[in-house]
Length: 289
Image (cartoon, rainbow, N blue to C red; front, side, top):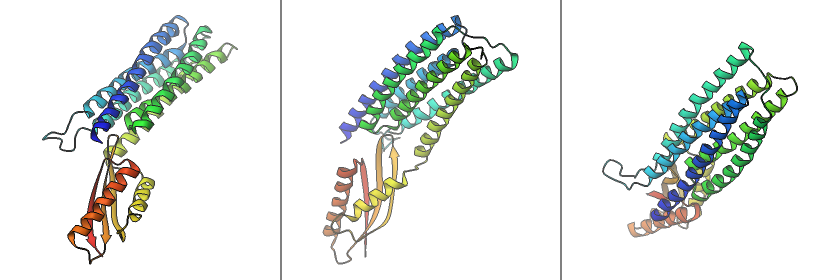
């Protein structure tokens, strides 16, 4: 199983590389056209993509670091590196989101609104379509390898697609003497960047502080009760190490069982949870009842 987990991280690297390539191309196009066509919204969108390059690079580094085997300082391995990468990415995104918001608000206050060229709107629409395809690709990989970092990157891809659509709407609206729509669209872009950053930050810190989905825990609990010989579940806990789940469970068995019988039941619990729920490791403690 461990070899497969490392192979999954290699697959996750492909998702990060695809995102980096897409963001490099789109940020260059958006910033160039944004400045030549005088569109505040498209420039903000381009800046957003430059941060995404850094964020995706952080995810790529995290995925590579996660593949390091366990050592004396990290007896459980380096799996959490990919979650830390997501956390770093959220900081970068938040910083740029605030910068974009400040720039957009300043433009509105100073009254420098103007209608940008329509080529900037078409650029936004093209970018939205491109990022939606990247989102679908990365989401598929994230679900396949159960990677929090790749899923965070996919959510960022989808957010970028919506941002580009908003950018295009603002630019098109500014063509009808609603010149304030372009900087307002830039402000919306900044807000969406900050929201995405906050969502990724919240999810990353949840996993890093050993938070876990209560619904999944209930599912694991019910699965343990299905194992022959288990009379009850006294306690069950779970935590995440990157894309891996580790479960600690205390089961109740008949007090008449000998050590060998109790051990056989605990082994069945381990095998059942690993096979049914793709859990990386299970620690079972047995108590007589």
